[in-house]
Image: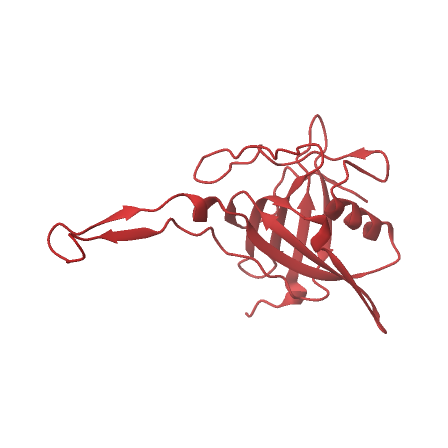
Length: 193
């Protein structure tokens, strides 16, 4: 069986404190999700004796920057005249409350992190929220990827008008872990709508 975009669903969820973790489901109407399947490894550099390869040659690990640098993800969706469209705009704009009353909580500094290292919160922790994004394609053997601590930079989201509707193009930066999943996180207990 070949996985197709029509088999996919994406969920964006907040961390959830004292009660429900809220999520929003998006179906792949545009079928153009792009994201990494794992985090990069640290570069190794070959050290030689004055540029000569001999028995003293060895590798050393580079700095951790490539391992912890934010990774891009992107997707787009058609917008409909529903409450979910407004909720999606709230998620990607960094507000703390959806529909004026539903409090959202950031995943930043609360996920498993990378290699067991919990990542720090943003310097602007009250204005920058990070969410969990999970993508799952349904099949005989489901295929999915989870992205922790995804921040949606407000200036990088675009909307395009065409004769057949409005398309929202969403760009996020993954600060946390990237892992394979077989099902959506069972912490995400309450849909926004």
